[in-house]
Length: 324
Image (cartoon, rainbow, N blue to C red; front, top):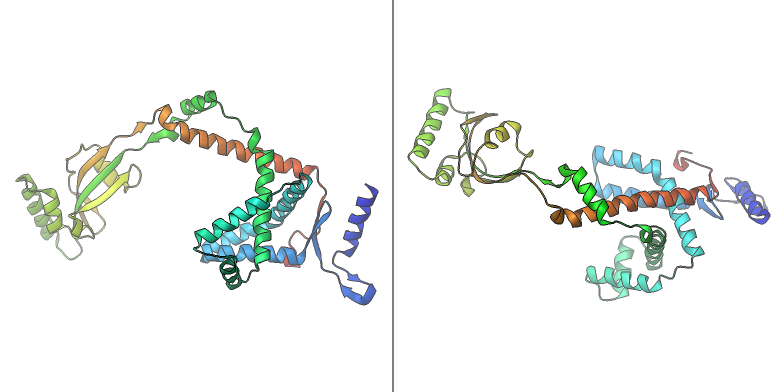
């Protein structure tokens, strides 16, 4: 214990100061995690990697929001990763075969025939093969320790599944679904009388039993014209409220009255309709098992990581390293 304290004390002294022998600059230490340290360059490397990933996924305000969230949790994520690797080291997890298998899968999925193909692709991304292997290996180790410490303790019995299904019927209810066909008449360049005349003309043809689809192909003035007014399928809640109110009481084959919308009028027909229904327990079993397993895995993982942090020595020297 005294030896470990001496090591930690030395690390603290070296953090962010000049090393007197030879006047060499010692790199700033961002945090201490048991017997490991997080340097400023390590933090920056992780920051830049995540920054690049976010910039490829988001733009504008969405990126700014995601980046702000990332900065808040980045140091904690790095600490968590180190703690998991330390645990994997204590348990002497052997993952070389899994590493080889994953590298082979990566090459296969990207149509690469050799390590050289992968090396060239990594070089284009500014990465070395050894650096990439290290990242993959560490990810396998982290996943391995989580699997050992968390997954094996998760048990889900039928009683839990049955009870959840009874208590949360809204989660297993299939919403009503409509397959619609429509005729849209624009009112932008027409007088009110012209619009009414057009609506009356279409309604009279429908009354004389002309096919709705054929009339939609002839009259509708929106993007569905080539599909004879086929608007596709909508689940309850996906349609505009005014349209949904008009069609939800209709049966298959029935047509709603003309509906006023922005800049025009709609005539809607329900081609197909599926009523809402509660899925049976057997239909929901697999979905339920996965949901309960995911919830328990998350809870137990959080508990494991919390316990791991509590029994570890963690000293954050620079909570916002890039602000200095």
